Amino acid sequence: MKHLKKIAVALVLFVAATGFVNAQSKVAHIDVTQLLSAMPEMKTAEAELKKLSETYNADIESSMTEFQNKATLYQNEAPSKSKEENEKRAIELQGVQKNIGEAQQAAQRELQKKQGELFAPISDKAKAAIEKVAAAQGYEYVIDAQAGGGLIVAKGKDLLADVKKELGI
Image 1 (spheres, rainbow, N blue to C red):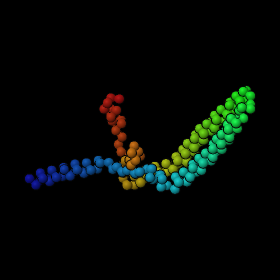
Image 2 (image 1 turned 135 degrees about the vertical axis):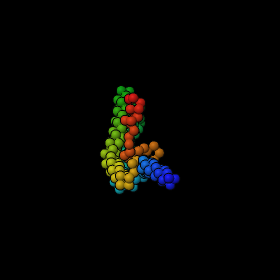
Image 3 (image 1 turned 180 degrees about the vertical axis):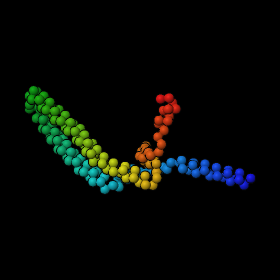
Image 4 (image 1 turned 135 degrees about the horizontal axis):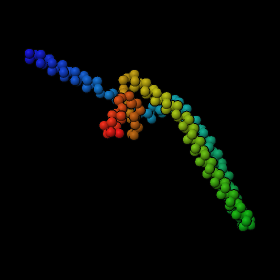
């Protein structure tokens, strides 16, 4: 009888321990930034962005040089010109300066747009690979190792509905 009780207690403990172990979620981490920087597609995209940025910078630098030359010329000629002519030239220079500022903003917007176009498919490819590897290795959660990186894969039970029910929401 004592042996039967010991066997029964051992069996109950074994079943409880097995259930507890099976209930544990598998969690992994990955440094997504390091992964992305190692991808050849990212290097190609960064090179394309750099080339585009250099083109925009060269155009803006050329406009700035032209503006500075014109401003210097107008300043040197100012004593020999009429007040009205100098005012027209000042307004012209302000317009040129405004146009340069707008060109800089437009270039920045274009670079951001191009970055989004280039990086989105690369990011999607990396996420799909992470999900595939996580599923193959049985991980339910994958967390970005970077500080503030967040959750990448969440295959475990979502408690939102149960918590809302508990709160009466």
